[in-house]
Amino acid sequence: MNVTLRVWRQKNSNVSGTLQTIEAKDISPDCSFLEMLDQVNDKLESDGQEPIAFEHDCREGICGSCAMMINGIAHGPQKGTTTCQLHMRSFSDGDTIFIEPFRAKAFPVVKDLVVDRSSMDRIIQAGGYVSVSTGSAPDGNAIPINKHDADEAFSSAACIGCGACVAQCKNASANLFVSAKISHLHHLPQGRIESNNRVLAMTHKMDEEGFGACTNTGDCEAVCPKEIKMTNISKMNLDFFKALFKA
Image (tube, rainbow, N blue to C red; front, side, top):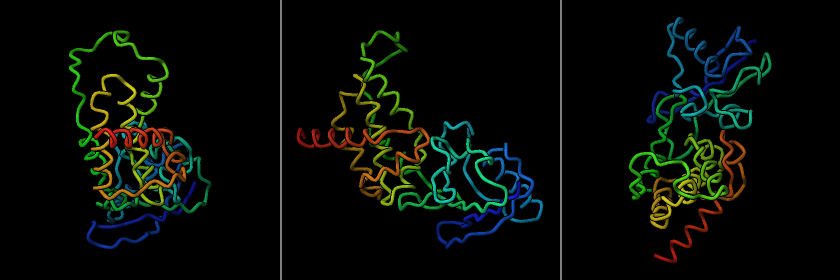
């Protein structure tokens, strides 16, 4: 298949970027989106041109580094899928595909499709540590946790911190990401000791980093590759006001 790419090219955060038209030819519909970009970069380099800068690591839908906007949708058109798991069969021969970096004040562009998402790391750091001394790995049944809490904690912990929720939100809100990270600890007894301090510290850090406010449009949940639910945001808001009252 042959497709036309309209790729965002930007040398660094200090200069303006622009969309560049690149023809991708003889692409197998069974290759992944990142493999297609690899082939395009091979052709660009053989022609003496600068390859497209984009992030990738595991290419197994786990690390979250393959973040990019594809036709205006974070990670592309397929629900519950990271960019590395998106295949070219999701497009048609002759399509024009727009590829842009995640756009948010808190995600400055480094180069081309690469953005600096270390603001999310700083939010995690603000949450601190679990003070309970766990020692070696305990037996799975040593700490009684009801199934609902265990399932909710596991579901929230599935968040890979890719930032798709931020990129898709019209306000560049990080509420889905932050609420997932808070929820997966608050559902477990080991994480409840510092829960009040954690929710206050992480939400304040989120505001400090320049993320926007949540308006409950649901775009975050719609594009999340791990399908994290917005109910986490409701729980975070409740926990926040309880912690504020106790403080």
